[in-house]
Image 1 (cartoon, rainbow, N blue to C red):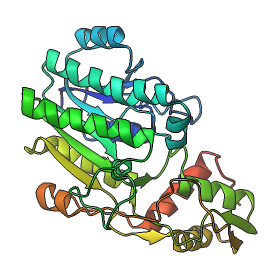
Image 2: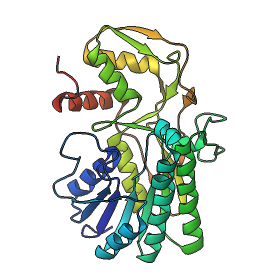
Image 3: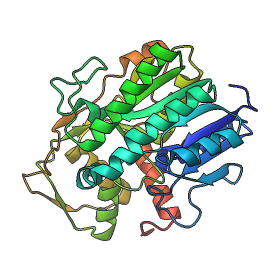
Length: 318
């Protein structure tokens, strides 16, 4: 990518998308566009927009709008991050999820062909694996999604690879496991931090605390997306995780130490339907082919995240 190439980030006002935009602009890219309908952008009035980025409000499911948008701009590269990322919501409102994740992705890839986009990197998810048969989960593990979210993301993956082989559209897929950091709007780490800040003496946790996840700090995930975009590899799928699986009990200990509290932890013994006991990603492929290496430890990442939440008044300083 040249520094003057026009780069589109769908979902650029959301958690990961906004960090990709910041990274691009901080590294000298001068023409970056965020396309977002703000459904996942819930932090304040600034909408997560870098002031040097052009923001366009729009929905990926609206083909007529998207076609005019592509026609009006000279886009060369696309980081396709935009999607409904809320798993319970996808199950409650499958039509909305389908329009955003499946139909929206179909529109992006078809217009990428029409307007001769040089390369697309598509954000997928570990949810495409469903309940993994073995861990750590490699890219060759069976794909058996158990949620509408995972199903629609798998459709996007298949579309990306098919368009590469059928039409020669340069693209790659990144399966995100658990990314966390500043601006994260939901999920386990954010919820624990908020709950422990609100009640410093006790915390109730679903399950038994032995659930294992593999967290990647957002700057590591962003660097993976960037390096995969720059790579000469195409038609490939890569896992991205932190490379250091940790269970919820250990996670709570680290968060409590950073917050300087000592809460009483109780476990319900039962988790929410569809919760997966162990989910950690094998990142040997992206290490080998792209040279990716996570840089931020879980403790460092949590310290950075909590500091950001404090500075932006999402948790109290005390």
